[in-house]
Length: 72
Image (cartoon, rainbow, N blue to C red):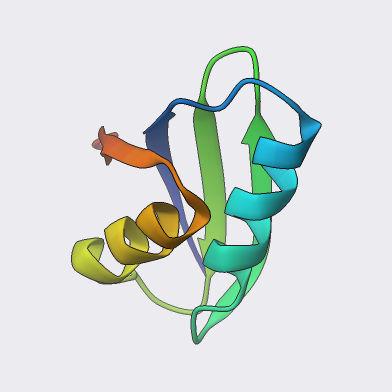
C-alpha cells in the first residue's frame, strides 16, 4: 500500500469533504480517502502511487483545486 498526502484548495464544509472523497475514491486502486478540512490535506491510501494528473482531474471534477502532493 502507498499513502500520499495532497493539498486541496477551496474546501470549506462537510459537503466539500464528501465531494472530494467521492471523486478521489472512485479512482482505480484507491483503498481509503481521509480529508482534514481544517488543514485542507487529503490522505489517500492506494494499491500503488496514483498519477498526479488523475488526482488533479478528480479534485477538479469535485469543484476544487489540487495544490500539490507532499513529498515523503
